Amino acid sequence: MSKRRDDLLKAFDENQFFMENTVERNIASYRKGYTRIRITDADGKPLVGAKVSIDQRSHDFNFGCNIFMLDEMETDEKNALYREKFKEFLNYAVIPFYWSDLEPERGKPRYAADSPKIYRRPAPDLVLDYCDENGIRRKGHCLIYHAFTPKWMPKDVPTQKRLTEAHLHEVADRYAGRIQDWDVENENLCSFHCPQFRVYEEPDYLEWCFKSADRAFTGSNRLFINEAAMIWNEYSKNGFMGTRSPYYMQIDRLLTKGKRVDCIGLQFHQFIRREDELTNGSLPFDPVKLYAVMDCYGRFGKPLHVSEITIPAYECGPDEEAIQMELTKDLYRTWFSHPAMDGIIWWNLVDGYAAFAPRNTKEGENYYSGGLLRYDMSEKPVYQALKELIQKEWHTSEELYTNQNGEVEFEGFYGDYAMKVNGAEAPGFHLAKTDYLSREIQLK
Image 1: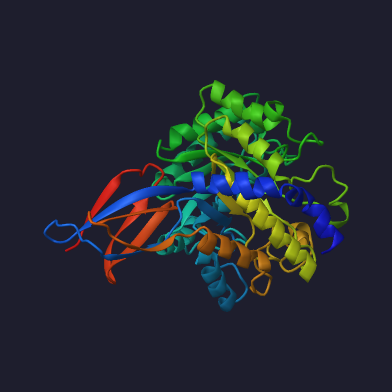
Image 2: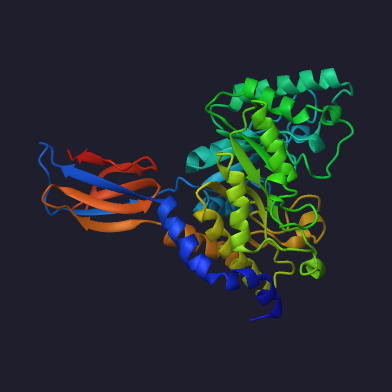
């Protein structure tokens, strides 16, 4: 074991009782449910002693990643691999809706699948076709982001508000029925300022953002607030201070003023230089403290997402990749176990294609090598570990026999299930959090 590994994973190692008891118990309590199935023949008579095989086919929980590199690779072979690797265990895709790239020329939005390409910005229709083909849920990211204002935007505030509101309605008219989740406003507390978008300077900026989105999107759409700063690090600079945290107070103010905030995004980018990671204050790798943050934001009664995750592997040596994998497993277990959590979204699937950098360089966010796959598309240990967690450890597959009433009972992870009875295909079913009653399946 390396000293770096011991330093970074110290809190998880010291809290093994918490991990093995509270975390594992809560996974069983909050991510699994009980159901009873009664199986009858074509005449409605119970089948006694029948062999029933059930196999989970999907998760209700959102395991996601941004999908910014769909068909954006430099070769057809890598594009095909990206399409295969993304759907292998991910069921939730973050689709880019940055307005500056979605509509770089006023009046000519890039919605259609065959739109002109912009790096890391695949057209929404292209992504939606892929998601539809593979049963992947999705979120639009993001409707309003001051740092990505179109260059053609006029400077006066009333015109900016009018154009933004019209843009929200245009996007909603086209996509509200196909994309359930939307990041309304992004990274308001970060230091990404855009003097061009002067609405950002208005005192009621956040209230206006959510009021405008609420007018454009239906109640069946979930409206998210999403933030990177001042969330996880305890009592360090720009860190977590419970209900006095700036992000908490922003959300509290929005809700107090009657604005619709349906879900809360808590980013987890560990953008820390390799040489600074152990001198940067309190690292957020402590399961007890992670629970304190989730408990705090869970007080709002809104679903939480760990909405953007980067865990560095830096130079991608064996030790660095092993630490990335081990940290990620412990973090995912902790997040997945909390009752308020609804989704965990990794950020970049592949190394070398991150933001603010030429591809396959160590510039910008590429420096951190925070992908699940290497630049050559080979699987890193972290990819294999997440696949093992989601498809095996957090997966339900059972072989049961019906009792004298033709019934089987089991507990399973929430999601869609396929079923066979005596080796023959039978109707599948969905196990949801609300399912505690018996269901009857009649065979033809």
